[in-house]
Image (cartoon, rainbow, N blue to C red; front, side, top):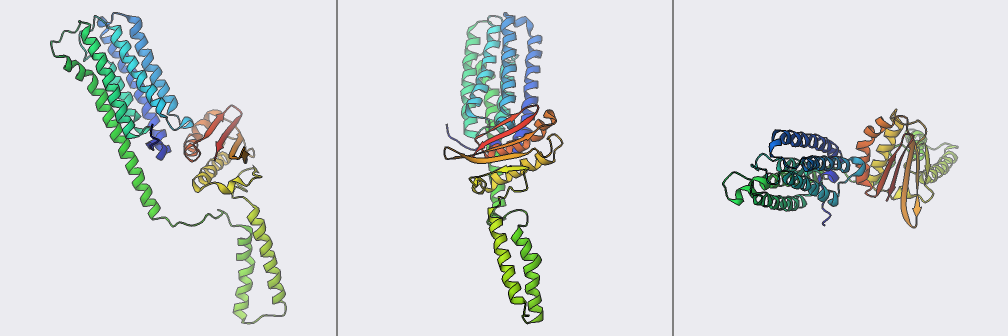
Length: 363
């Protein structure tokens, strides 16, 4: 499958907002399924299969909520397939629960609930994949419609194509809308990124805080030079002082070159292979953001943030750890930072227990 970008990957924080829609959509789908099953109970010939259909829909919705979590981002192709197959399985079980007693297709909840599931996928997968999934799902739903029509219980005297259209159209329409939303989101984000890049001056990376040699330069060297320019002459001691200042400046520049850009940001930092200097700007920004949050949040113990960078069989890896005070608040607060970190470090794993938070990533 093509590794096309998704709205969730381009906008990790938008994926968190979209997850709320997934949760609401799953609840609405379950309410519709339960309500319509109760309203059409007379058409159910196998109550166990009817319950199994609702359970299958509930499990599909729960799985969707789980894999759309920022802690598991991005939502993968195989998850898309599982979600669609789960919703189709629920439709099939509902059809079997009414086999021989289903008189009307338009009061079946299967196609409606699947349309809700499909349309909420728009924030998580690329448009072409969503279109392909919609057509495949609609085809399977159409085959179920054919099976229902062959049961001989339908009372509406219309051609078979009408039954097929009635069941497949909501799924196909939702899939097309989902793909359109995905394409629009990707296009808008890329346009915004191009405008941002066009207006940004590209400059080499520098440390965020003034370094020792820069502070010394502004605080001591420049005033000395200004005094020389003002007086217009060099005193007897100025030459010796200039040589001393130059020597001190060289020492400070050497010391600054040995410091990492993470020095002073994290409580304990270990980087013997100097991996930090190999990180790109997005990775630096992501690490700095999550460390700053950990350092300032009451959900984490102060003075316990530890970052280790190193090499494992020639591959650069990193481990960020800190002690946790309130795990519930920590999970909620960390969500946007983890979403961004998983974009900067696609190969990353997160562990959050009652006592410790650990982020392991490969560079």
